[in-house]
Image 1: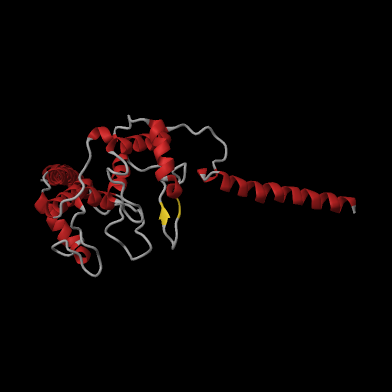
Image 2 (image 1 turned 135 degrees about the vertical axis):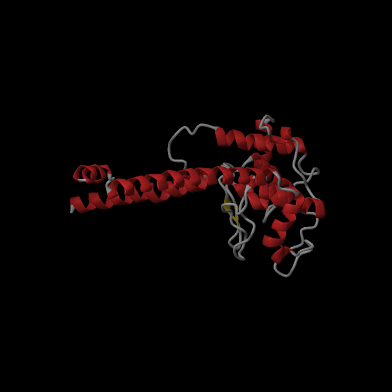
Amino acid sequence: MAREKKRRSGGRRSPLAAAALIGAGLMITGAVYAGASAAFAATDTQTAATTLTVEDGEKLFQANCATCHGLDLQGTPNGPSLYGVGELATEFQLSTGRMPLQMQGPQAPQKEPQFTEDQILAISSFVQSTAPGPTFPEDRILDGEGDVAHGAELFRVNCAMCHNVAAAGGALTEGKYAPALTETSALHMYAAMVTGPQNMPVFGDMNLSDEDKRDIISALLYQQQSVQIGGFSLGSLGPVSEGLFVWIFGIGALVAITVWITAKSN
């Protein structure tokens, strides 16, 4: 009997070992569950992203845009009608984060977009189906292979008075401003010329042909990709900022040296 009791007591597992086994099992189960959940979520997201339709765009519009622009897109006291706007302007406003508008102001600021690219395209397709307007251009218009020299000349004549010769942007009246174009995509350059967002005029085919627009886009893309040669760019704002810098720091340094020499001589 004593030997039998010894065997039984010797065969018992430690409570700590049992707890460790249970904990390991829970951890393994949790890891497997988390991995499976992530995989299913990624699959669902990918499926949803590739299956968005015009109807999905309509639902997104009704939930996020109809308060200001109306369920029929004819506008309300809080927002303009979208008839004739089309998908190009819709994509521009949503992709740059200007819409939905956070608050009323002199102009809508650029910010992070609220929607994914697929959602933006779905909303744009819905607007185009209901209120047709300017649409996306041919790929060649955005390829950056146009005449850079001609495009730079056209930009100086038609755009530099607001956006600055270096495309660094500039201030306008009443708190408005022309944004910098140093990181703007080719599509959004084209959309801005065709649709005239904010305070920008519309450049139709009578003003600038598609080839002209292609050349301007090519010039701006070339400028974005050009290697900076160094030195102080001073915002690339040209002789005004350079002259102001010389006046403040150059003349200021001369005055300081003159005062120091006078103090030493006295």
